[in-house]
Image (cartoon, rainbow, N blue to C red; front, side, top):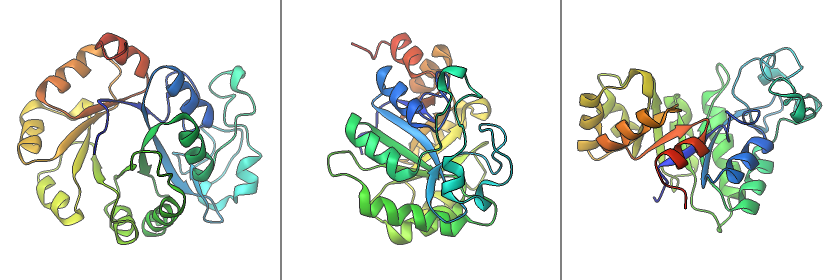
Length: 246
């Protein structure tokens, strides 16, 4: 799979409200060719772009995301918390996000972010929808998750899409987990990543990507180790700083 070295985190979360259509559009405007975003299920089992179990941090709503039907989620303001300029920005469905990706020609790292206890159903629901709607004009999505159960459920439905395990510190049994899940890549947190372990993962034949990297110096360092890519809130800063932009 041809994935670029710089991927916009939750769209371009340093410039626009995360996991919104505005953030995906902003990443494109800044020169990103791929974005990452989070997918969980609404209360009526519709895949949506959202990160938190609770609505409070990034909307004007309250309560649990997993207990709120799509129609009620769509009525919330998901932009004003970031900046008044984004007032009225909505929580998008995964289908809406994929339509925008197709319009812009953007690739995507789809992170399955299940609410508590909904790992398998979220993985399965995301896979079923992507099987139905992913456009042939785009490169296949890269699927990632911290949830082993979500990745397993996804793979049972959509074996054709490459998968990556997300971790904070790389666990001692990382190789066994990747083999058991059939993953091609490991996505590790920058703050806890050390060169020795990073090189072990790559020497074993796995792609290693690093999140969330917002400093040019750190991006240059981990890419210098051989990392396949970094996920960043500020794709413009890294693209420019690393000389990837024309």
